[in-house]
Length: 270
Image (cartoon, rainbow, N blue to C red; front, side, top):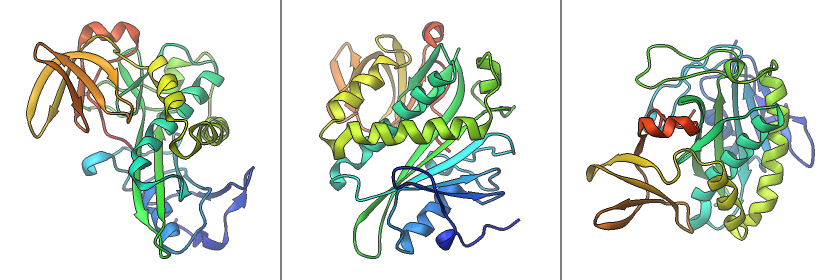
């Protein structure tokens, strides 16, 4: 089934939000981007039962079979452009809270915004930006959650919510909680003025905080301790030479961190 023209089709959700639902799309992020470029005012969720070209950061493929959650939020003019990277942490906090609402325990947020359980990846996020026709910033946050199945054959462990929860949680049940929590977190964030509160919530659920990590970026790989986040959400890596601030990198948690719900490669968001 091809994606319908959802510009005229989104249905009301709550608090000015709308939701456009699809049986199958290439990527919910790409559908949200098309909507932004067509002049959509934002506060739009794009939800699909299946993606044929789901992707993560750096264009990595995201397996997207039916039964899991694939959703992208479109928010227009959410903050000054310099603060836009913070919206990924807003979404990460909202996702963690939504899973907790369904009875989830033992989950951890892995920088920048993977959701982990017992060393396995449950979900990932991909935040992107685009300029609208009237020259405003539009932020798109894609969220992929393994609700009923997790892919095999990856170079990192993966699990599903069905493994982690004592109750069944469908993609639709999770989406309802996620949409509510994201709306609340955006309000707390207050266009960036409330990032300190979002940062505190994120750190309270962080996987591997204080423990050993390895990061890899164009400068190479290095090891140290996960010191926390700076005021803008950048990773703080403590090494014998001092504390390094890292804008973007692949993050690996040491096996000793798995006891608090960490582990695996930062796989890069859906």
